[in-house]
Length: 253
Image (tube, rainbow, N blue to C red; front, side):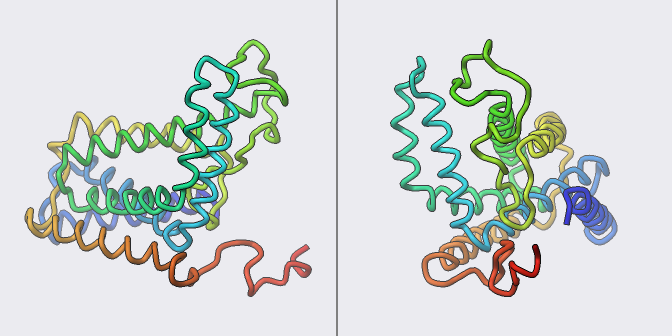
């Protein structure tokens, strides 16, 4: 699957959900805002779900990011931040589960319209954080070997092999995206994120307040149990890696 194929699938799902919200629940007042809710919500749920299958994969990716930040901040005015990242790396598995659960629950909150103002701001902050992360990693492609990121005058032409983190990990092992593509994706997601900040009152709300809270609470508890079970007590039931057991690596060359 490619990012284009995934986007088309999510777009179709968002259209169906928007029509259901209008004709089955009669809760849609602004078709455009509701469609953006359903598109971003479905995208976050899918993105989180393919990572929830194997939280350790996301944890390893976080360790890569922490190591990159550590080396970047060393020997700069921000060197006092460098020792923080090895400490954060020790809790990468917990951070992984937290981010995965947050991503899926936030997607669910967008779909049902729970706590609209809070959800709009949380979505904006998450997308802004992802944009910074993928943007930073993408820009390291312009930093030659032996040059620090903050030595802007020594930047050269973009070379993908200059990046220490070669894929963003946005969709786990299901779909590999290089940071440049992921950065552009996140820039596009900033459009609905900013729109929600000003139009959160137009966001649809499904069910009543108690129903929305029950859905979010049940999703959170279920996901916490599921994520921890996939590396603490059991193995992932689906393996998206190219070297999984059912694949003959020699035959694929």
